[in-house]
Length: 479
View 1 (cartoon, rainbow, N blue to C red):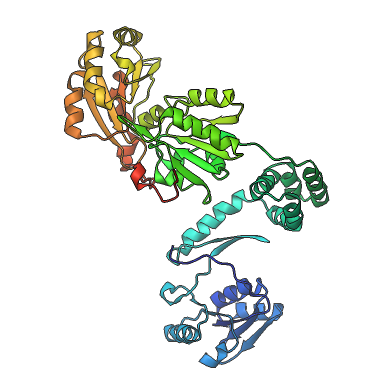
View 2 (view 1 turned 90 degrees about the vertical axis):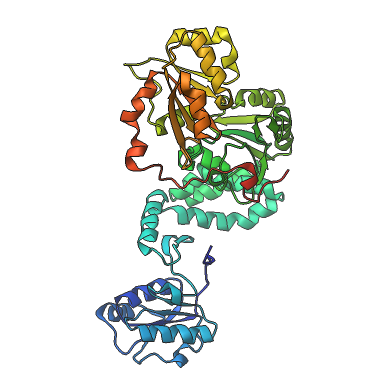
C-alpha cells in the first residue's frame, strides 16, 4: 500500500489552493465541502473560479504570485497551475513546513492523493489508484454509485445516534457486533434506507429490549474451482461475517483475502498421504468453535456436496444440535470443463454425466456400469491413478482411442489442459508433469474442445488468480 487512506477533519482549517483555473476551482469546491476555509492564491482567476468564489463563503482570493509566506497557518496545500515551476515551488515550500501537499496530475509531487469519492454523507467511500489512473478511479466510483443506495447516509446517522445506547445495553463486544449486523441487513435497516427514521428508532428500541445472546453457526461454503471471480455473492457476504474460517488446500490466497480482516484463519487441508487435520478432527473443531458462539465458515474448494464431505459435516453438526447453512459453489467439474472448452453433455454425443472418485474407479462392477451408460465420465482425485483408470475402463469395454482430457488447476491462470486417449493417457500425463489438483474428463465430448475452447482464442484467463499452497498462505492463520 503506497498511500495510507485517511479522512481529515478540516472544519475551520485554512487550506491554500494555488491556481485560478478550472481544475483549481474543482479542488477548492471539494475541500470546501469538508468545511475548510479556502484561500486561493493566483494573480488571475478564470470564469469558473470567479463564479465559485462569488457563490461560496469561507473563501478568499489573494491576487498575487505564489510565495512561501502564503502557507502561513495552513493545514493543507493544493497546487493546480499550468506552470511546472510554480507547482514545484509550492511542493518545496509545503514540504519544508511539514504540510500535506497535493500537486494536480503530478503524483511525484504529492504527499497525499485526492481520491474519487462516493458521497453518502456521513458515509463516504474514497477510491484511489495512487495517482496512476484517475480514469480507473472514476470508473470504480461509477460502479459503486450504482449499488449503494442514496439512503445510506440516513442509516449511518441512525447507527451513530444509537451507538452509545447499544454499547451500554449489550456489553459483550461480539454480541454487539452481531446485533449491528442483523440491524443493517434486516427490517430496521430497510426502514432507515427508506427514510422512515422514527419507525427505525422505535424498532431498535424494541430489538434492544428483546435482545438475547445468539448461538454459534456454521456456514459450509463452496469456494468454487479456484478463480475468485466465480465465488457466489452469498459466499462473499458470509466470509465478511465469519469469526473463524476453516479452509482446505484448494482455496487460493485471493479467496482468503475476501475474509474480514479480524477473522481467524485455520488450515484444515488434506492431500494424498498428508493430513494436516483428519476429517474427524476438523468436524470436532467446527463443533467446538460453534459452541463457543462463533460464526464458523467451513470453506471448501468446488462445491461442498460434490466430493467435499459436506454431507458428513452436516450430519455431525445436526447430531450436536448446531445450526448450519450450506452455500453451494461452482463445482470443479463445471468450472474446469467450461474453462477447457469441453461441454459435459451434448445431444450429438451424450445425454448424461457421471461423477466418480479415483478410488471408486478400481471397482470392475462400477467400470462396466459406467461404460454401459455411455455417459461423460468425470473423475475427481484420479491423477495419480490415471494408468489404472485407463486399464480398468478398457477392460470393461471402452475403446482405447476414447478421448480423455486432464485439466489441472482449472479456472486459474495456472490452468493446463492435456488431451489424450485412454491408451496413451498415463504416458501423456507423465510427459506433461501436470500438478494436482486435476480433473479427468472421459468421453467423446472431449473431441469438441478444438471447436469450443474460447479461452485459447482470446489468449487465456484474464483473472489475476494466485493459486497458492498452504505454506504460501497469508499470515492470518492459527492452529
